[in-house]
Amino acid sequence: MVRIKNRYLLVNILYPELEKGASKTEIPDVISFNQPTTNALSPQILLRGIRAGVAELFGDYGSGTIAISASTSNVVEAVNQAPVKYFSPATSTFILRVSRDHYRIAWAALSFMNSVPIKNGKNCVFRVVRVSGTIRKAEEEAIRRAKEIVVKARREAGETGESTLDKIFEKAEHGPAESTKDVLMVDGSDGEEEEYGSDGDG
Image 1 (cartoon, rainbow, N blue to C red):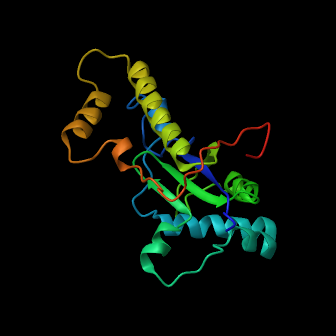
Image 2: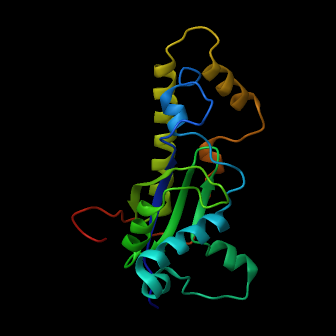
Image 3: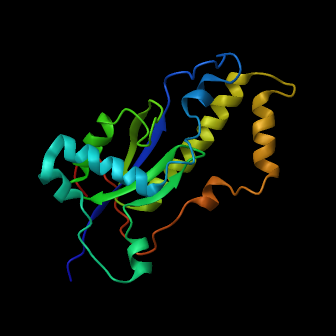
C-alpha cells in the first residue's frame, strides 16, 4: 500500500497596520501585531481564500495540485481529511495540510494574500513559520510561539501594577477557555516522525 506524504504548514496571520482610532500606547506592539482574527473567518472560508489565491497565481494546474485527492462518502472521514487541521482565531494561527510534492504552491499563494478572505477583511500578512512532516511538530511550534508572544508582551508592557495586559491574561485564566495545548487537534492517523529540513525533502 502506498502512503501519501503530506506537509503541515504552520501559518500566523499578522496585522502590521494599526486600526483607525486606536492609540499606539493602549496595548503593546507585539499584541497589536498578533491580534485575534475575527470570528467571521472559519476554516472553510480560509480554505476557499487559499484556493482562490492558488487559482489566481497558478491557474488550473495549481488548483488541481492542492485539491483533496481522496473523496469519501463517510462524513467523519471527510472531516478528518480536512486540509485546515487546526484554526484558532484567538491566536491567529492555523495548520494547513498539503501534499509533500506541492506544498510550495500553497506557500506561494499564502505569501501573496494581503487581507482576511472575508467581506471588508482587514489588511494582514500570512506568514508561514514552520513546515513539518508531522502535525505534532507543527503543534509544538505553535505552542512555543504562543508562549514566546506572551513573554514578549509582558516584557513590553513593563508595568508592575494592574495593566491592560494583566487584565487580558486574568480573564483568559479564569474564563472557560482551554489552554492552547488543549485546543490543538492531533491527527492520530499520521505516525510519520520525520521533519522537513532545508537539506532534504524527508
